[in-house]
Amino acid sequence: MPTTPRSQMTLATDTNFQRRLASLLLQEGAVVAAEDPATPNHDKRRALADRIIASPLAMAAQLAPTVANGTNLVAADTQYDFEGGFTITTAADDAIRSQIATLWNLMAGV
Image (cartoon, rainbow, N blue to C red; front, side, top):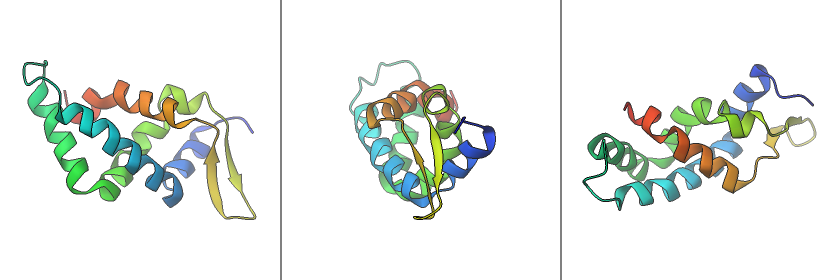
């Protein structure tokens, strides 16, 4: 099934995807939290990491539309599983995490 804006927003609102995204956001958040404070825009980047660490599921729900519409996820196949009642993507965890890293400054308001 071709990826469409509708399929990506359906993916973004899928609770299974949001749980997966929460885990990947936490992983990237830990990297940002540990980065050198001299990193450009570290304060804003760290503030996002802190919000994710404090409330991963809520932040995943908030950030899911941005990540689901990123290049790596749009390039993957997104389908709705009618039997299971959920949306799936062929994007690997590494591709999603790379997308998170790419979008981090944008999501942090930099």
